[in-house]
Length: 254
Image (cartoon, rainbow, N blue to C red):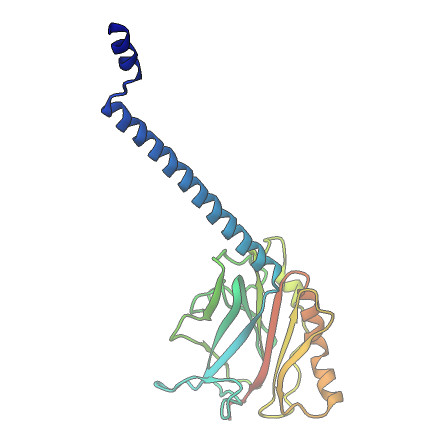
């Protein structure tokens, strides 16, 4: 009889011990489940990031212009009535990209100046040296330049204005001198008061494509007018994944 009780006592596990055992099993299960979730999430994010990197960066440069009068709505540069932009008029720019990227806006004005806009300046031209390294900014899919409600003012001299959108997924190396890459002759002569053209080139492209054009004249004249800016875009292709250029007319103050 005593031998039987001894055996039973050896097989007995108290309810408290069972509860602790179950609790540890549940904790182990939850830890494993959490680890699996984290692993799956990391794997998913890594896969998504890899897919984005493999896809070419795409996007558009939108240019808006208006007069200096208060309350006047800005017009997209392609719209009827937008050109020629008027002396003392105002311009704003927008980058709309397929993926977050570091954006650089540059203005080659009709007086031959190379003006760094974003990210060197917010809403006033405090930095005018294109060779000054740009400040670092987070990548984004949409960038307004300047911020909403502001604008860049045109001067009184007429001619051809050129704006550039340069984009890459990583910040530009501080050793790169944009001034040397943007070295252009004086702007082309005004041929038509509503002349407009947009160009595009991406890293890996062999040539510059024309996105839109209006009032360009004959093909020979257009090729001569575009030669220098296209050469510049092909130079920039080594440093930027996406390059967009818009050229348009600026009316002389009468």
